Image (cartoon, rainbow, N blue to C red; front, side, top):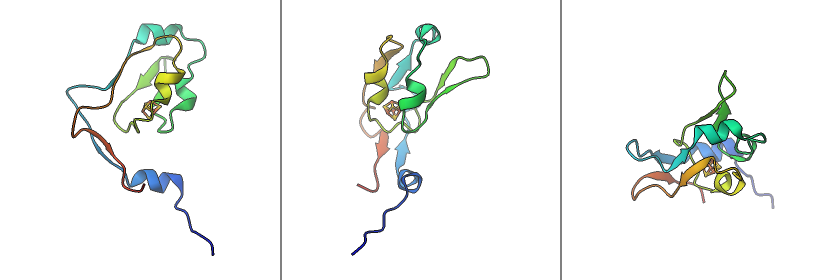
Length: 97
Ligand code: SF4
């Protein structure tokens, strides 16, 4: 018996987000991020929320965050100055397991 699995992008597309526009649950210190050589956040975020802008600075939007905590663990240079779960009723609702 084979079990058909849905591709990851489709699975992620089922999720629902209630973004807290007033209180970001992840906040960066852009000056610290500018000094960081490795910028692991660019590679570890499964939602690809960390990007480089045209000036080479970190660009980040917490909307779409999967709340996995990987960026918090991998950020060794204290560029992430706040990482908490979103306030009640906000954040991601997983729809497929
Ligand atoms: S918690 Fe996970 S999904 Fe959210 S920004 Fe960090 S690495 Fe990306």
